[in-house]
Length: 256
Ligand SMILES: Nc1ncnc2c1ncn2[C@@H]1O[C@H](COP(=O)(O)OP(=O)(O)OP(=O)(O)O)[C@@H](O)[C@H]1O
Ligand SMILES: [Mg+2]
Image (cartoon, rainbow, N blue to C red; front, side, top):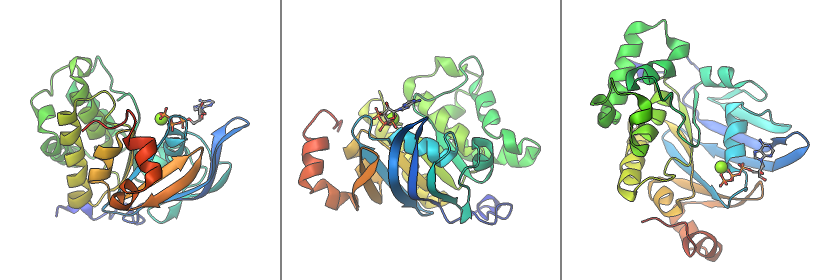
């Protein structure tokens, strides 16, 4: 593989993300009550759970947007608990938030370049990285000069992920990337996540309401319930579990 996979500038990378007994919330409201979860390099871990279970809160605690009140977060083998979002991004985590936050008036190309802000001095590395991201998302290559706000929902999601990848993360966490997208586009994006896992060795935490689609691509899965892990295991085992069947597959969640 290319030199950019060596992790030489980031010696701790290659060991994924791990949360241990995490407690976090907003002010005095505790949302996560001692939650543990890990994703290894080359692994996709799906996180599912009802509205309000704490999925987005978990991702915010992993990426430093909110500070845990107890427990640890380890990234690439280093303890990053309590560090802010810039420090955690620099340590190798890319957070693709819900609602695909692109800069609408900027071009696709400028949005991508902004994703590599922390590495902006490395022009050659930036060009190389951009080429790689466009190989993963060829639809963006045809639209580099287009204002991001005029992209389709699926293309904006690709840009949002692509922008995260520009920083060369070792860990990618995504908050409901399938939201509002047609099943065909969801399949395309999830297939790309599968390739990123295998070819780049990324550790991926995939928060999803689309349980079927997420479980198809995930290596392991965790079901959250009110800030705690209710179930975890390989997706095929979880799919056979009555509680998962009733809560997520009989209701309005399934898309394809
Ligand atoms: N900024 C905030 N301030 C106060 N409480 C919040 C805030 N954000 C989320 N919460 C609360 O934290 C709990 C968990 O919310 P969270 O967004 O993590 O759930 P979720 O599993 O991502 O749900 P959804 O599937 O709807 O996205 C909810 O009770 C929510 O009201
Ligand atoms: Mg959420």
